[in-house]
Amino acid sequence: MMIKKSIDFGNINGISYANGKVTFNKVSMNVYCYVVDGMLVDTGPRSLMKELTPFLLGQDYEQVVITHHHEDHTGCASIIEQQRSVPIYIHQMSVEECKKPAHYPMYRKLFWGKRKPFHARGLDSTISSRTSTWDVIETPGHAEDHIVLLNQQTGQLFTGDLFVQPKTKLILRNESIPTILRSIEKVLTYDFNEMYCCHAGFVKNGREMLQRKRDYLLNLQGQVLRLYEEGYNPRQIHEALFKRKYPITKISFGEWDSLHMVTSILTELAIKK
Image (cartoon, rainbow, N blue to C red; front, side, top):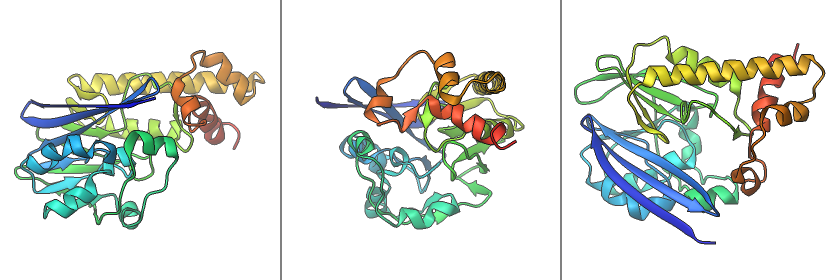
């Protein structure tokens, strides 16, 4: 079983991007890095170091902002630290963790490589680029330290992994659907148009698509709670609502699973009652 890699570079609306893809055992994962107004948003994974280096070292920027600590977003941060004298920012809660070797399952290392330590600074509630001030909005759920970046002047929103797709079918074991919903609702109180996702890429109708994701998750949440009240246990609810099985569930030994969507809803909204 070979690991295949590919990379694509482009520019949209004056924003440069690199889009890398890793394929292993019929499972493909891709990730974006962006450069906007002299600011790099996310660094990409270590596994794509060779492919991403021309972009990361050749682009014109003077600071780096990382949306969260996961290895597909921080993997090349150590290379930037070694090769370019620019500050790297992340949520304050992850500053110390970034200084240490990262620990995560082997399958993730196969896809994304092994993230090496790097030094980062803690983000404030705003950050300034060359011509704009960006709101740093805390959006936990996918990861505790997750943030999104909003330029209220231009309506540009960089969402990290908050969006990804309108109909989420599976999540990591430690993710929380109710928390993700609260984060989406929070972001929707702001005015924005364009959305730049680290996995879906540029989403022109960003507000509409994020609203679709909110509505889908609210409906799912309602279905889960209704079935639980009717006496279904979590696995029975899972079987009733999620018929399709995904290869990543097997490859990840269950770290990625639609069952976690059900259990996160029940843990917060039903079982604790």
